[in-house]
Image 1 (tube, helix red, strand yellow):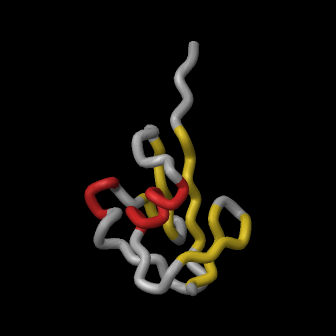
Image 2 (spheres, rainbow, N blue to C red):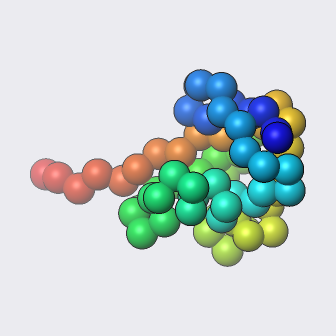
Length: 67
């Protein structure tokens, strides 16, 4: 298991997991979200190839519509 920080809370996931695996586990794949890993924005096209590593800091922000 890999330990990392997700939205300022401790979290763990299986070794070798990608950002896509995390999004699937959180069941938020269809939502409009922005994702940052270690202070760098990760575009959706890179989620599958971006692996989560020990002590990474990941922030996920959901877009909310309104006026």
